[in-house]
Length: 402
Image (cartoon, rainbow, N blue to C red; front, side):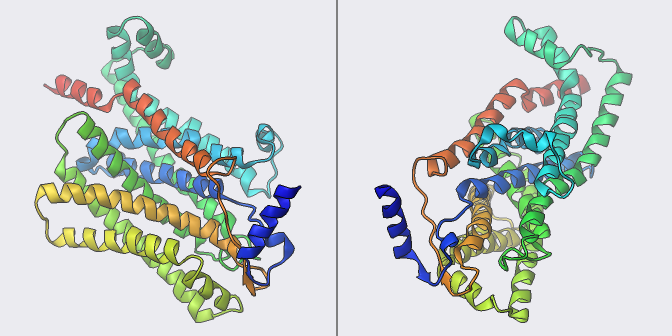
């Protein structure tokens, strides 16, 4: 009881102006920030993979399988920050067995399963089936059993069967593109549907979330490709890096334009909430919104990548720039999610005051828990790259063509 009153006293000391009693503590914390951030990485990584498979952008081939495995690794963890945020996480499955047609979260459960079970897992299976058959015949012991299980008994590697694998995989990728849009667009739909919150209530919110997801996913694949290639002590494909940089530049332009349009519309309409939102942007969210999201995460990458479209410096400098810019974009998009989720809860519905957000190091909503859910996908990705190495697949393809 004493600790509760101490907490209330600390929070009240940080309150500015007038707020309602139920606005003292924020209901959504850093785990809810991480949840849309991870789903965005999934959607963006898959979109980059589809550029090579569907739109025949062959220069992106070195990142195709990495992008697919990255999307799968992060999708497996996408819902866990949300589940661990619940007071009774072991009841989370009930949303799937008692669905409601008017619940966006219930519908998302089925979209998530569709995207995981039908799109990603099937596409990766058809893409790797021939290789798993070959690896199952080459390996011994435990690994031989694993590959045999993964092939689910389909061991035909005839040219006709391989052609069907490619056609079915292509069809799944085509279906997966709108599925990726739906997977992450719904997150913006949920926030945009909260009419009582003027920071969230905008029809552009789903589109903004979708384009920022593509930006973050492309940046993540760029980062992982460079790190994995360096760890393998192989040479980076500069044509591939330049192509990823070009697409990242284009998507950044669209993302920045949409967010700017949203802000211009707010300024032009200037509703009764405009003043409190302006004060929040200039005060509570100045560092995370203006400095990190806008300047570090958007303007610097945008200007640098734009410069690279007209003049290409030495390869060594471009490699360093792409690596640094990928990190800056990932940080910027994370704080975009932070500014939406946390920022939308900082101001009072009375429009006359602000509350504060305090996050601890440990606990269910602490930094360590958030870091855990962000690190786990990288661990899963490491296992997937070990189990289904794209470089061995490429080598096998080269041997066959030779």
